[in-house]
Length: 184
Image (cartoon, rainbow, N blue to C red; front, side):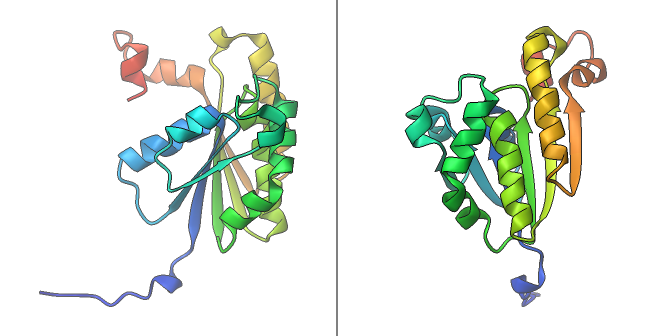
């Protein structure tokens, strides 16, 4: 049998951070798909949602502010929660060469906390990439406004930002496909 002795220290240390409900769902899908070679971190204000995460590292942020009940679609609470938990966040991404931050923009935790987490990573000298979704148009103007502000805030603190409009996903799938099927 052929074996290779690979020095894993030669590879880049990559961490994927899912922030909020949308980001945590993305991390769960990546884990289910068998993505390897990266460390997954789930960050959320919602204690119950965080419990459902499949990530090895889970960080509940803003415990004092939210009492574990989420940010209630308020990005300011998400931002304050991340600032309250800066030490835990920086400890979790320590040693990374590259951090991917994934979040669904428009809610409270992902929208408010993702820019704070990205800023922490940048301050630590880590290459930082944001991968976020914009809400469906049927989710309403308020959610879209939150998302656009959050994206602007995130743009200022990442090296690269990939924004995926959820409406575009509906154009890509067949018309007969149910919403549930489209997200599999």
